[in-house]
Image 1 (cartoon, rainbow, N blue to C red):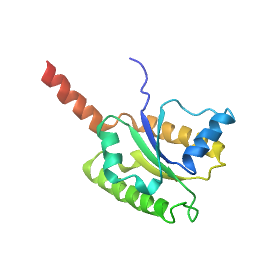
Image 2: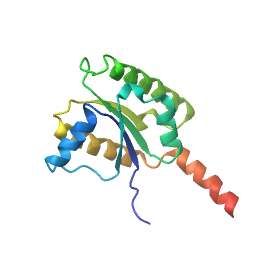
Image 3: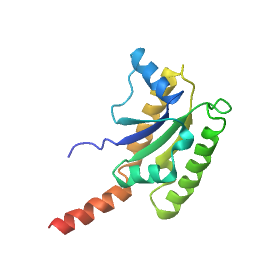
Image 4: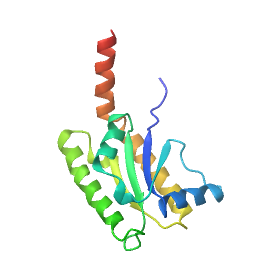
Length: 147
């Protein structure tokens, strides 16, 4: 049996986090290939349903990456995203999936190293947590239906 490799979805704002990811690539700073980046105009545009759907569709962990506090290009989008993530963390704890599977991360466009570092840290954290229990339950139901 091969070791567990988590699937991570990173919702990144266009102006800072996505640019930081691009900078990491330009600087040839590697980060885990497990991290799949989805570009958004602003972290504040990432609705709760987007995060929950990512988990439902099989992501083991999801993080929203936005501008530094006080530097959002859309004034307070990153603060709205942070409140949403905090709410969803509580909800995921209540339903038994685990709130630590999602996170809010802030960075500026010039922080390519920080992007790579946080991507690696989050991937390792999810690796230790193991597979998403929601994904496992859905997979077991599917296997039973097929059998």
